[in-house]
Length: 132
Image (tube, rainbow, N blue to C red; front, side, top):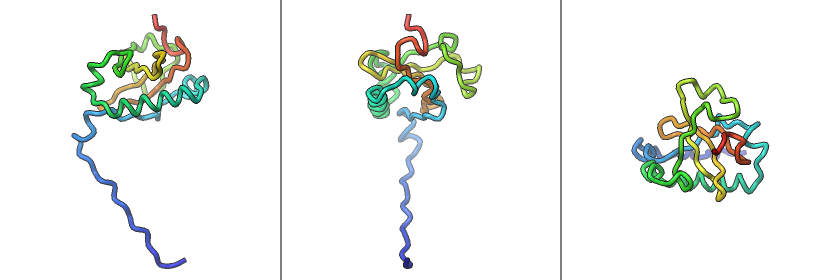
């Protein structure tokens, strides 16, 4: 081969103030059996588009937005139908519900600082909780 060396690229570091006011999404605890098996490509596209939009909004904008727009509502753990993963400890009393489609299907997430851990993606109304 040769003695050519690949230059190591540095990723610019950001200060905490650069990201603390914006949501960051994590899929580590996504419950595949409930969320993914019932979703089609159109729903996933809507989900990714919504995450992209929410990442561009600050928490202040999200907080004042209507729950059927870019805002959220809190769903109590007792109202969630599927079993919660072990990462959702007893001290977590509710999950954040964000709408990701035009017909208001939600995804549920646990907030830890500015990180939203997506737990469930609802493919059909009532799969995750009763919409009363």
